[in-house]
Amino acid sequence: MKIGIIGLGLIGGSLGIALKKMKLISLVCGYDISKENEKMALELGLVDEITEFDEMKKKCDMIFLAIPVEAIITILSQLKDINKKTTIVDMGSTKFKIVNSCPDEIRSNFVATHPMAGTENSGPAAAFDGLLNGAPVVICDDLGADEIHIKRAVEILSFVGMKIIFMDSKSHDHHVSVVSHLPHAISFSLVNSVLKEENRRNIINLDGGSFTSMSRIAKSSPEMWVDIFKQNRENLLNSINSFKNELEICTKMVENGEWEKLKNWMYEARVIREIL
Image (cartoon, rainbow, N blue to C red; front, side, top):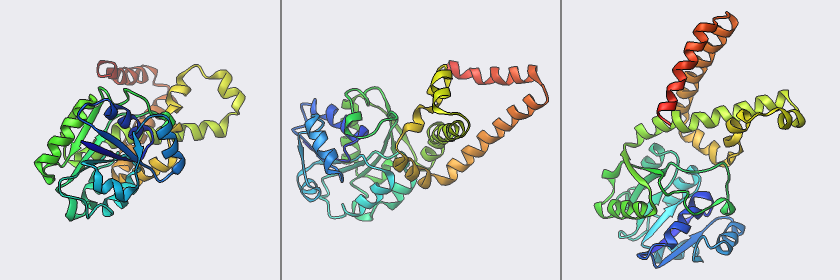
C-alpha cells in the first residue's frame, strides 16, 4: 500500500515515522506547501520521498491531510477527481464544518478523524516516533464513507497504536471545545495578561512551575489555532462563557472573604485527580 501525507509538521511527520515501520506499507510520500518543510522532512526520514500533489493523487492508495482545518476544506475541493478506490483521511481538530464541506464526489472516499495528540511545537523538527501511539483518535460521521475506506482507516490507525472512538461530528466539536479548545484560549489569555504585568526577568525568576505548565500550550501555532477557533466559534464561545461563570464565582468568594466556601469549591475541582 502506498500512503501520501499532505502536511509534514508535527502530526503529519509523526504519522510518517509510524507508517514507515509497517510492513504492509510499501511507500510513504509527502507533500507540503513549504519547500523548506519538505526538505527537512526528507532529511529527518519522516517520509520516503517528496511527491507533487497531482502525482500523489494518482499513485497513492490512501492520502492523509495533516494541515490546518481551513486548508483541509480547500484541499478537499482539489481532490474531487480522485479515484474511488483512494481513501482520504483528514486529521483536523474540528469536524462538523469539514465533513459538511466535503464535495459530494468524494464523500464516499472521505474519513473524518481527529487524533487527540500533539505538543506545543510545530514543523517537521517537532515530529517524533510514538506521538500517536496510545492516543485516542475520533472517527466522525463514518456512515457517509464506504465501508472499505472506513475499514482501511481503522486498520492503519490501529496499527499506529491509536485507540478508535466513533462519534458524530456535531458532538465531537462540542466536546473538544470544552476539553481542548477552551484550554488553549485560556492559556493564550493568561500569557498575554502576564506579559502586560510582568517583565521577562520576573517571569523567569519567580515562576515556580505553575505558570510554565499553564503557558505551555500558548506556544502553539497561532495560524493553526485561529482556524480552529473560527470553525468551532459557537461551541468555543459557549465554553468560554462557562469558564467565565466559574471565574466569577471564584472572584466573588475572594471579594467576600468566603474562605471555607472557596476551599469547598477548590475541593470540587480536585475530583479531576480521579479522572486524569
